[in-house]
Image 1 (cartoon, rainbow, N blue to C red):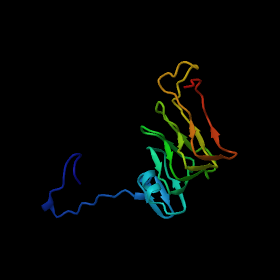
Image 2 (cartoon, one colour):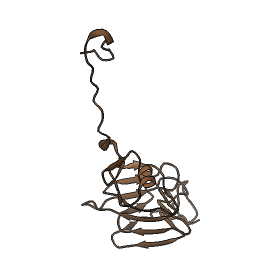
Image 3 (cartoon, rainbow, N blue to C red):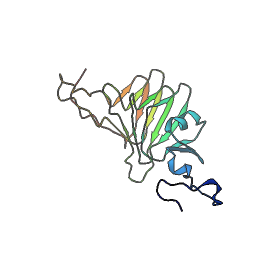
Image 4 (cartoon, helix red, strand yellow):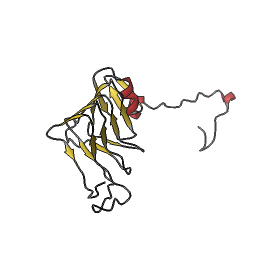
Length: 173
């Protein structure tokens, strides 16, 4: 036993065991049986199969050109850190296989979208809510310092029933 902040001397003959965190508990996403600490790592590594979100994450995701990925929100929330929440340059499918169907893709940064589907990219939205929760546009003339589109589509996009696109602001650029 060692007091708070204390240490057991190396020559005490005592064995000190430090519990390690279970990596799957800290994982942001999972592909099959493999877990990843960030959703971007899972997207980059995915060859095939569904990427299942394991917890709410705060990061900007890029689906590279030539990639074909499915992200299952699994009832969790993806919130951007500084750019578009998801930038799709490849082929992206978003689903939410959770019981409550409350998975969300959110953007909180001025002039950035929850989903930006680039020229030549394809997106199919089968689940989830796409929103800008900090949208501040109060009129057609006033952006409030944080306004943009929830989804920007410059490629091919299919939005199926059950998907919610929430655009609360009134500003139009």
